[in-house]
Length: 428
Length: 196
Image: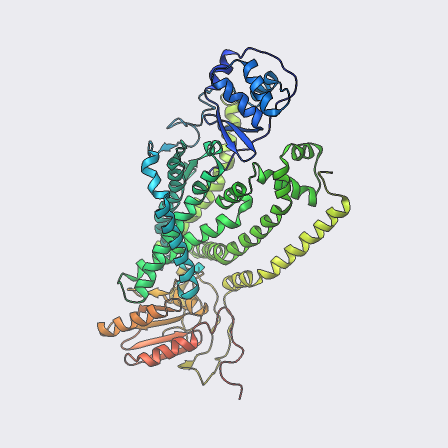
């Protein structure tokens, strides 16, 4: 899920000047959105994915211009709110410098052109109306998500055999088949997670975009929610929590089914039980990751940054931490100074959360990912070094090796191709 | 107030970070020791007697990781195997309808699981009872048919075996309860029975 974009302040200054708004500026004003955000206001160009934080007089000024008032009248209105004279024309120049009056072009618009670009993007569903999405995030739905969370916690505490281990990645006696056949349902789960963010965005009327795309051979789901920055913070929680809410619901279903099988309430094939365990492991790993990998701007980060009323907490935390451990360059010091007081104050302790998250990430990787990965590498390597050409295992291992090596081999080949195209003037 | 920290404070932050990272590496010792154990396999050892435990002890063979192509030439010291060369990956505990290769079940034993195998002649009602036991101990038991048995049921743990002529619930559940988790790339208990 895309996190909030960086926003910065463009405060109005003193001194009144009257200036005519240019035609381009006037038409771009129609594309500006103004929203309230705590003590600040956010001016946004959702079509460009650009947002700036301004004090109240700035928002009053832009709102007046959008209502058709001349610059002088809008400036007077903003001055009344500020309690001092403000410079409306200077403020407009600041907004222009921040790119808020740029005209949309095919390369700057957030809407991708289908079938073009380095990664072909496929619009999955044209749109869902807010009224259709709203029941999924109403009081009844959130009660269901809360019940699912309680069920998961209770089952994992009370029934230890339901806790997945890294062995559950190998739910079939063939390790390569285990991975290959787990991929489609795992992709489906990832798609549902992203789609739930998207639906939550739609439920509050945000024109979010959900895409199915690919990078290399990897399937990618993308939810573009940059326009969320123009909505009140209290409405954003549901969007940030939506992915985890559906994950925990699916995890509860998987655990309850496994418990029902274990207690002879239902019957199913042994492989279905093991597949459910593998999917539960996949979901649990992803959910813990979302809270641990704050440094990667996960859903957990977005939730915390929103709750702490910060605008660019990730950058502030990075700079404060770098200052503490290594020191900052002059440019970085200036950048830190330009970040809001609130973000800087939170960053002073948020770095410790980053550190705690990194320790949990290390534990997750060592406990679940590395044993699996190391065993797979050993197995594939061993089967290629000691080949039995007539066996399926050898060809599976050779195929895995070819795909892995291919991933790395294609990088220098692409670099060489780009250099050739650049020299030929095709690429710039 | 200055935005950046003083040199003294920077030194303190650096020292605190090093202390925290060392503590974190120490706290994660369990997982990475398990990884090393998982990659290295297990050494040969004489049978661990433990007369208080169900089943009979079996000498523990050198147990490295092998490729699929090497499995055909491996000879184990018991049928079914209770230790020895095995594949680098293992199987998840659970119920399997088809035989599971010895290279996988030995790795499951090395992780502390109990493997229950039954001959193809085992009556369906006994297989159903075995499935019930495997479900009850779903985190500990691998249940699968086995072509190496003419009749009966074989219970195996790392370096331990019990062969049953017929289904015996008490004997099976005792074996599972007392031998699950006894070994996990190393003995998990110093003493199996009372020291007296």
